[in-house]
Length: 321
Image 1: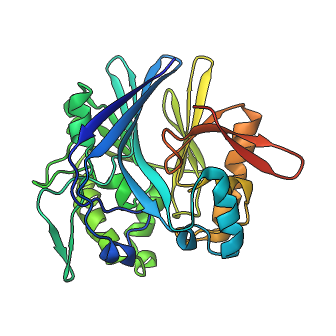
Image 2: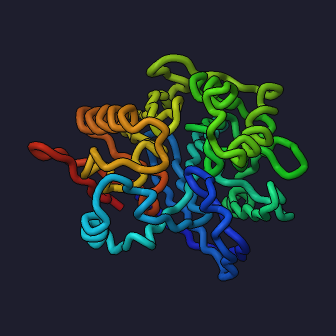
C-alpha cells in the first residue's frame, strides 16, 4: 500500500544539478507554482516517505556523451522525452520506525536571499524543511542523516542560512573516501560552487556528530547497509534498506536515467570516472537481481521505484509504481 500527496508551493528560481557547473549561469527564472509530491510505502517495520521537492530539466548532450544524438533521441522517445527536455526530480527519503527517523540526502537547500558568487546571482529554492513541516515531521526528531555523496543537490539542506544545522540531534554518515576526496587537492578541478556548498554544509559537520563510513560495505544502522559505488564521485554510496522480508536498493546517482541501465556503455558528463561508474552499475544490478530487490533512483521519474530485469545480454528498467 502507498499514497501520493500533491501540494502546491510557490517557487521562484530553481537551480540545481548533479554537477552544478557553468550550466547554472544560463538558467533563467521559473515563476510558476511548484508542486511537490510525497510517495509513502512500507519497508518491513519502516514507514518510508519519498519526497519530491523540486524538478529540474537536463540535456541529452550532458546525460549521454558518447552515443550519437540520433540514437539518444530515438531511445528517449520510449520515455516520452527529448534531448532538450529530460525532466528529473530531486528527492529525499525518510525512514521512520518509532523514534528512529533516518533521512537520506537533504536536497539543494533554500536561500531566501540571492547568493552572489563570482559575479553571478543564484537562487536555491529547495522546500525540504517546509515539506517536513507539512508532513508533521519535526527536524529535531531526525535521528540519522545519511549523505550519499557531496554534490549540492544532496547536501544543500544540511544547514540553514543562519549557519545552524537543520537536524540538530542527528548522527550524520558519509563515506570517508568522499570526505577525503573533497578535502584534498584531488578535487581542485571541480566547480568552485561545489566547494562553496561543501564549506557551508559539510565542513561544519566536523564539529557535529559525524561518522565516516569505511570500506566497500558496512552496516551503519540495523536496517541500512552502505555499499560504496565509486565513479559518479570517488566515495558515493548506495544503500541496501532491509527490514523483515522487505528490501530496497537506494542507488542515489549511480544511474542518472533508465537508459544508463539499458545501455551500460553510455557515459554521462556528470561522472568523474567512467570505468569505475560502469563497474559500480554492474555491481548494483547484479546485487538487485540476486536479492530480488526493488530499486529507488534519485533522478528517475518520481518516485523512481522499479526493477532491473535481466535478459540474455542486457538489462531492462521497469517502473513498478
